Length: 340
Image 1 (tube, rainbow, N blue to C red):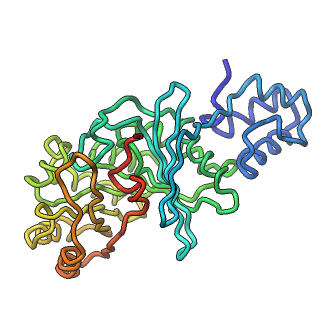
Image 2 (cartoon, one colour):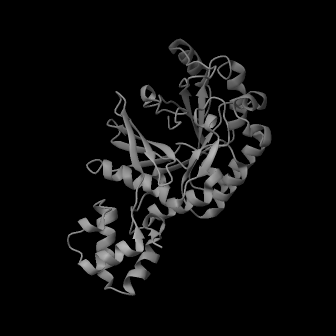
Image 3 (tube, rainbow, N blue to C red):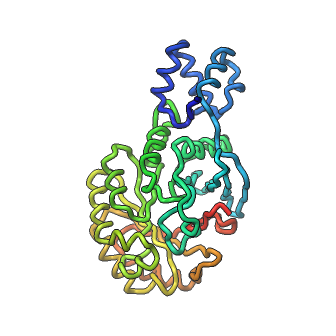
């Protein structure tokens, strides 16, 4: 049985190769795959036929297949991908010319069990977790699609709750951070969560370096209970305890994502509660206007409502940003991914 190449640590690949071939063949293979982004051994022109055949006999280089591609006017492109079992997921490539960034939004599950009631993915329910090679495969596919524009950032903000598939997520991150693979900087990788304390603690203890983003959306338990069923199991107090644990073990501050939904979390009491929750935390806050999802009862805030809210939010001591979601017109923005 062939092994999934994109689930293998570089040390394991190296050990397997040098049992049969000179060590420099390992370096050649890794350069072809991770530097040149060529994932078909038959196209690796400086490799001998016996080595190519050995590679093909021992490893599968399969990547998710693009089923649909939709580009927005802002340059963001959403890809619907088909996996080997015919499951479908979505990833989004988001260019930022002003800051010379190219961000990939990666999925970690097919669907999601957490059922946040403002999110399209949550309406799917959980179908299954993604395997390591399916996570890394999205990254490699994106790299092949953007050879002339190097990926600069990876955010686990696609379909699924990363903390519910954390072992595979962490192994995928560890793999792409290896020097002989993509050597991806920990500062350029963000794991987003709806707020699973055990997962946050596991990330803190894992030794894998990555930034943490928490989908907060309200600092009032009664409001967060309405928006996010996870809060009924893990209260804001439990979430804050886990965040403090992470901050003690990480050099990165936490990012809070706060989706602005009129008549729910945009009044002065919401700001007061937020101020109390984040007041002693090393963090920044991204305020994100809600992106409408067909069939859900919420609406996007009007510009006047956003301006009024941000004027009040300026009283917060933490760094705050109004972040406009990219790719909304192709349902590729925050909360809109559903593999439709």
